[in-house]
Structures are given as structure tokens and as C-alpha cells.
Length: 374
Image (cartoon, rainbow, N blue to C red):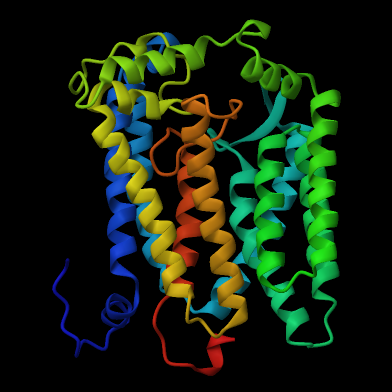
């Protein structure tokens, strides 16, 4: 850890002694694993699409320091400033999300990306953390009886967001956004009748997606019945874990990255399993678990309802995304195109995660109550 005197009253000095430095270290380690795995997995992917071997790695490594700087800069903000940032980010992200339906880049039958200044941007990644914080504000306002119909506004925000996501279509992101929103609503004091009603609505939505969206039908059928569809990527990923064993085949010695199309993105965990083994994979899992559990431990004694709800949403979102990616790679659930936080290739994903984790670290800083703390 960096040596900073407790008597240092500068902005960075006060930040250093109030921020959760252990979570910051865990995030830095995840970024380090990401850099190593991108260097291992991306050359083969780049060559398959006619690019220089290390082109994708160079792009991702350029985003890593930007992500780290974003985490630190955002964690310097007060809860009030984080709330304002989230509201502006949500409104801007929602406009970009709607724009994907008109001018979006279509990939595999879904329009989820925008080409902005030569960069491929996925607006839904930025909407997720901003919606979690904005919804937390609304739930907290309702509980504090400020005369604001917070629950109704939060429901409207969720409905608008999910509607646009399903029009792309993106069922996976819709599920994550809805699940995180539901967790926040539950923590805010959701009556049991609402729990049952929302649970029934969620089951109905999943059943409807299965019957109405062909790609959802195909993924679920393939998961339940190996003979029902193409399981090439999942089978190669499972072989990679078998080949890696406990200690792995060694850096650069893996072969799955040469045959697995998404080895640098959705299936990068399989590259980790083959080249570095089960022990390193367990270390990665432990880092994700540490960030989530450490974050909740910081929230246990939180008296500010907004901070509690916003932190809960951001942590649930982070942990859920990591769990979905690793579970689908291990064939524990149907495949879903969702990145492994701070490890998979993707500039939009990395910066959006930096936004969310920066807001989390800013919200969980130890601070003396002031008028700026909501």
C-alpha cells in the first residue's frame, strides 16, 4: 500500500484514508489478471479477423489505465455528486440506448452497439450502474416520505429501460437490470405481496422470452439437450478446463484460444483455466467474492438509506455479471454474451465497470456527515 501520512489534508490524502483500500487493491488485481489473459487470448482472435496479432491487446491495454483513473476520480466524489452523475449518465445512456434501434451496428441479429469516433460503444453497459444509483435515490425518497412518488418513478425507469433493451433485443441485460432493481426494492422494504407479484412477473417474462425469441429458445434448448443445437464453444471451453488441470499448461501454451471464437471476450475464463489452471481460476473467483463481500461489510452499519440501496445495487450487479459469465463458461447455465468484469476484452464494458466501481468506492468511503452527504 502507498505510504500517505494521516496528517495529509490534501484531497488525495483525505481520499486515501477514507476509501476502502482493500477493495481498490482487489480491483487492481482483477485488472492485472485481465491484462495477462488478454495478452494470452487476443492474438489468435486478432489473426482470425485479419488484424495484427497484438492489435486487440494493445487496444484493451490502452483502456486499462483509463479505467483505473476513472475509478479513482469518481471515488473522490461525494454521494450527492455521485447521485447527480448517475442521473445524467442514465439520461444520456438511455438516449444512446434508443439510438441503437435506429443507427446501431447489428451483430448476430442484435443492435446493441453504436460506432462513435471509431469506437464500438455498448450504451447498455453504462445504463446499468446509473440506473441502479438513480433507482436507489427514488426508493430512498419514498421511504423518507419527501412527497416524491419514488417507487412509481423507479418502476417507470425500469419499464422504459427494459422495453428498449428488449427491442434490441437483449434479454440477458434485461434480466440483470430487473434482478438488481428487484433486490434494491426488496432491501428498501418491499411488501411480501410485491415480492410474489414481481417473482411471478419475472417467471412469466422468462417463459415469454423462451417462446417468442428464437435465440433464447436455441440457447435454453442447447443447454438442456446437447443434441438440440450448436455447443461448439461450450464444449471447447470445458475441454480447456480439463486440459489445464490444477496448475495449467503454462502461459501461452493453451490451444483453445486458436479455435474458440470468443476466447478473448465471453469465454476468457476458459483461457485462464487451460493456461493457468484451477488454482488461478479460484483466485479470480475469490477476488470477485472479496469485492462483493467486502462492499456489503462496509454497508452493514450504513445509516444513509440512499448509500445503502445504491451500494447494494452496484455490488449485486458486479457479482451477478461475474457469476453469469463464469457459470455459462462452465456450462452451469445457458450461454449469455456477458463479459467477465475487468478481464474480458471490451472497452465499453471496462469503462462502464470502472464507473460503477468508482461510484461504489465513493459511496462507501468513511466520512463525517456534512450537508453534502444527503
